[in-house]
Amino acid sequence: MKRNNYQNQKTNDTRPTKRRKLNNAFSIDNIIKTKSFQNIKKKMSQEDFYRSNGSCDNILKLVKLSNKAFGEKLQCIIKDLFNLDGSCDAGHDAQKLSMNLKFEIKSSRYGVTSKDFMWQHIMENHDYDYLILVGIDFDCLKIYLISKYHFMKLKTKGIATQQGRAEGQGLWAQRKKLLQYLIEVKDVKHFYNLIQSKDEDYSDYDL
Image 1 (tube, rainbow, N blue to C red):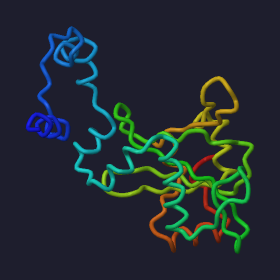
Image 2 (cartoon, rainbow, N blue to C red):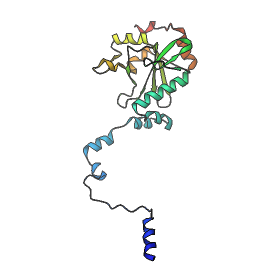
Image 3 (tube, one colour):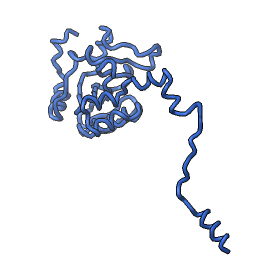
Image 4 (tube, rainbow, N blue to C red):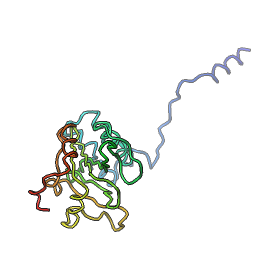
């Protein structure tokens, strides 16, 4: 009887057992000694870059998102900030129904090497009036506006270029090349003043 009680006690014991240290040739202790791992260790990630520049945890949450989730979440944030309506088809990301305007929204994080924003997959054949370009700075969002008409004229100047070999990938452009052609949005009121005017003064841009 005592033996059975001992067996039951042993069976129900949930305490963790100590794992024996094996002499494994592929243990992490050996992996970290390889040249390839050392190269990985030296390479700064986007998260490391933002953290080293003083970004708070909430900025880092955006930085750490996967590429697909990053684009989707930033679209939602922009729609919330400017009280935009959802899209009615795949040709644009948002719209303002009361103004009959459609918007494409593209977002970027800083590249660790370039230390700049690169907006990608901007489609020429999509149906929108304005391009909203969003960049995650170290402590805020940088938001820029340009009409589709004026952005596409930058293609002929080689500022917006074909992404990859396939036309289906759209255009891409780096902020430092685009900046003089963009209007930085200061606040919500400024945004609506810009899209209501429809007569942006691009005379200084030499388009």
